Length: 137
Image (cartoon, rainbow, N blue to C red; front, side):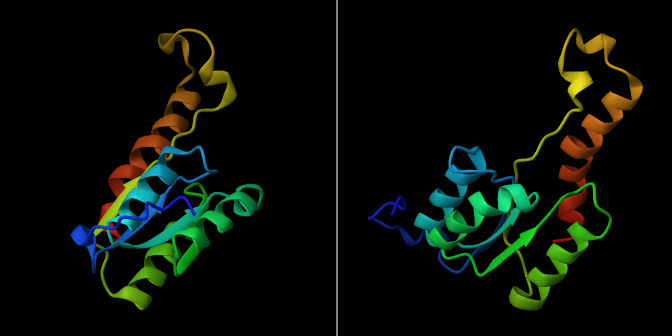
């Protein structure tokens, strides 16, 4: 088990949502392990069926009672995650937003040469969702 053996109860009784775990190398996974080691209970999302096979075992490792899909580009998925959290826990104490995306064409070359569509997609997935999530918690 990669959860530290020495636990500290600093976050005992706190509940958090971790968004953006893709695999055991994800920054969000490191956050999840640390928060769990400090006593927090976690809800974890995965992007799609491809990442689900990597994320579910990690969610079990941190004993996450809520594990759900979340593609912020799919209408209603974000709301479904927060609805489930509200039904199970009533409240959410913290949120880790560790998702980002840019279309392939927006990743090469200079930033000033990115198409408007590429820029808007990047901002929508990477930034706007960051500002929108706290409105649901």
